[in-house]
Length: 88
Image (cartoon, rainbow, N blue to C red; front, side, top):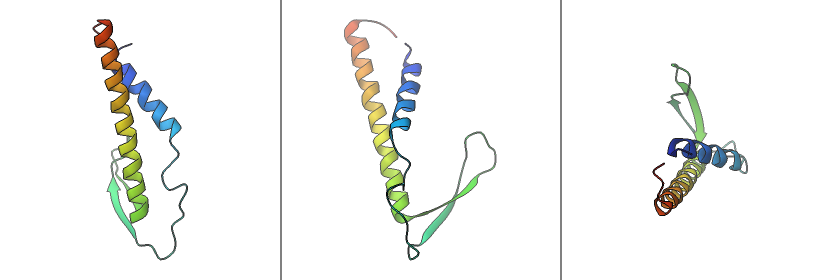
């Protein structure tokens, strides 16, 4: 399996296993929401996304965990390829 296929497979698994951000916490009426524009995949029009500070922090932590997990799996895959002597 090529490195790119491995990366996409790993990413798909990590996304499927992680619950959406903010699912466990409900925002209260008193929390200030901060809005900004985000580029949406497959669209040329940015969309406005509003989150509380807690939701933004939770989303950033989730994204970091996913990226760290993907990097770890990729590292292990590269080690296995190096040890087996295959070029990819």
